[in-house]
Length: 540
Image (cartoon, helix red, strand yellow):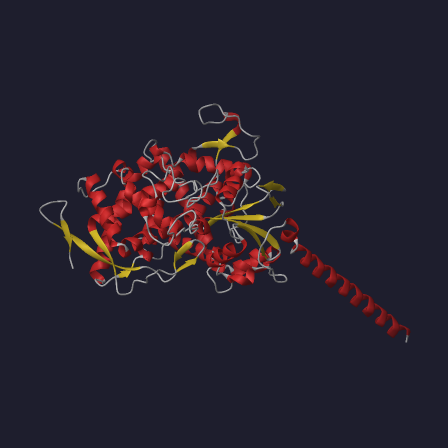
């Protein structure tokens, strides 16, 4: 009898403790959803435990943000699980966060919870002194001198692309999907020119680097439920990580291949010093940059830091950076080129203007020099307008490192701040007739003056295809050169037209950058050279 009473008491105590614990947890979770109401920041009402994440189910994320911006304004908050996130589509606020108060918003939140080998050491994943160190090394390989040395290799790979396009045209005269070929081309030119590495992606669809790149994209995709759960509930990451099997396996293969390549390369450099291109990889391996554990370096006046505070990147840092550049850097360039080709096919008059400018600048030669690419002003505007309508990197995310107040808005430590270019690019007050494709919005040389757009009340900082501030896209110059080169060579050889299977308007999705959801199907018509080199017609 006494034992039964003790059991009842124990059960009662256990249930009481359990009820108290549940009540505490529920109250704690609910309290997390009062952050924005206390700060006076508007936003959608969250649901218990999941916040506003369920609002994105089966929807294009940018459409959800667009609707919220229309309802709540250009600064509002939503909850990713329990974590508060502020969305910004105000140019002035964007400048304050990304430039003026960069020290408070220098860190990036987790892009992909599943990182393997040395991937966590890549530029997009690190912050603070380690980020400065990586940025220095990568930037050194993207100078004008370095791009000039990489350019001949880019031309060679682009010539290979033209041959593959010819084969595709012969095999499919009524049109074909071009996005797969462009993706493989983008990886090839980057690997060969920037890294001196032959990925063979154009000829080998089973290339390790290509498979790794695609697995990285899939792992980071918002449509990946496993990744989504890990982002919402970080404590579950160790349990979910084994499900990211393909990405893990290819990361291991990719790392092994790159390490073997690096060691072979260093051996060859020792045997034949001076026989190398000063590309990105060369600078990653040889450049002495500020140590991650050093105090803030003192500038010597020549862009260098004192030798006592500098060292070369270690092998893991180099391998991690290569993985980051391939896994996260090539895809956006590939997607941009695909959208440019789509726009050429849809807007025939714009394609004609591009070709007229090209023939005027190159005097109808088959080759295009780097200097001539720099004079293709209308092509630059065409690319910039494509990036306005299709911002492949739709925004940038930062983590707030300390409590602060900016333009009357309170930010708390730990908050995620998302600056959305995709929303700003469709604001009618910034870009009149924003639905129209109008390259003339931008002034000549707009890549260096990208904040100056034609049209009405366009804000000087309302256009952010490459981000803004110290963490803006480090490779934008190289990307622009590659885009111009590919488009120029394509225009020299073909008329680009829509086919019976071209989807107009093109449907897009986020994976993890914006891509054509159903691919881009086009038709190429070979341009027949006539006696006058500047007069040609398409072969139908």
